[in-house]
Length: 221
Image (cartoon, rainbow, N blue to C red; front, top):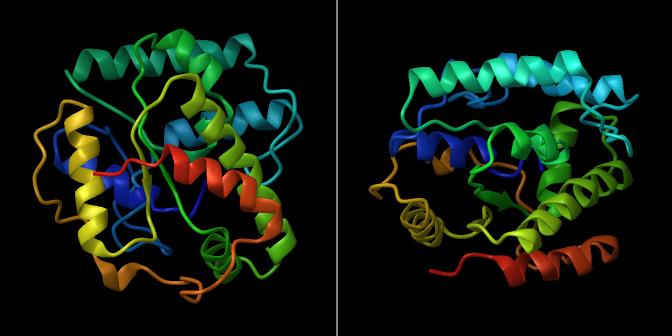
């Protein structure tokens, strides 16, 4: 899900040797950049738009038209030619993984999640129209996809809103699982983390089943 620590995770893995290509390294809402490829973001937005949806309104039908499939194939071929080990980060892709699996049969995943109220506060800080009900509904849509993918073929799943030492331990364990040379990541800056809920904030009832599933799948070093 957006605003769940995905930029931190991608930036940290980049420091460990995963090439991301041309990505954002600074933007108004993230001093170190969201680590997303504009090319892929536009492609994913286009696929969602083709199906009468968007990242904020996930469509039920998620068909890739021939033009979009060709664009993805071209992107994968260029990254394969340029880098021995590469990856990408875009939360939208969580809604569109079927075609990614076709184009990259041995695609490896790593996921991350965050308390739904923290996600809501972060979304709301950028767009006041993201009221709690809307943010929670979106959190559920993305994290349902995340849990389903993890259940299909388990992969490292991290929780973002934990103390820094525990976050580092999760990252190191994920790096080992991915065959990367784990080292202390300098990408993390706790001063950049905002919008955390109160320590005793309850998970909204609509999210509790999913939260439990996420916690069951979570990587525990």
